[in-house]
Image (cartoon, rainbow, N blue to C red; front, side, top):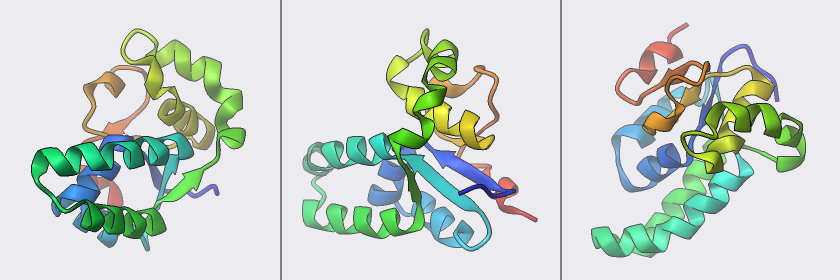
Length: 141
């Protein structure tokens, strides 16, 4: 699962890929060149949010779940058993901001990869982060 180039995706990136076009296009275009991975717990969180977001946006939930399946084929899940050893260092970094985000930080620490997120809680925790507006720069060779 290690790669020289990659990104750890936060759940908000998965959600943007399901309900929007820009992030989905970025994921589609990067998949051959860069490892995209995400903690398994973020996939579960995303699945829980799909019905609520679909209803709020008046978006067809069936389409959203199909989009999720397509995105899930492009983003490698990382099992809790692989990153659980990084729980405490991750919590130390994110605890004051959003302790529930520790899995993303743990996977980032484990794989030594930056995080792709729009969540400001990840900024300033000592790990490189990329926002969608500039992430293509990371994709360049």
